[in-house]
Image (cartoon, rainbow, N blue to C red; front, side):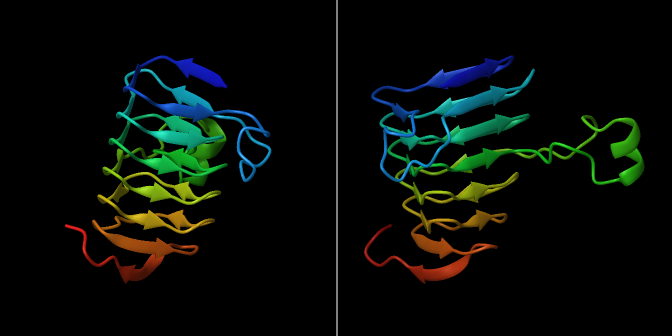
Length: 158
């Protein structure tokens, strides 16, 4: 596991972090990494489980209690580079967009998914494996695909 912390990193109680190609049979060949830039924060709630997940935080990433994140997921709250081609030539690591990410209580993120900047994933939501989530997912819904789209409402959860 790699941690590069220049900001705030808080880990709740009973958090399970796998970081090995052998720790999870679907975990892929990556390891868990946390990069937290100056002024940014990652907050992991209680009873969070994740395997070989790459976090890159320029702003804020909040993971609520009982969230499960499958193997080889990526959670990025910024673009890494500016959109403007002239800025990419002169300042390739500056002036890019960042927006907070929030993953709600008891959500499940399927393996190899990517959660992008500005996304809120609601309580109990399920993200199908290999999805790219670029917009908000409401509570109690299943979303999947690239880009992730609504699949169905989960009945019996409020």
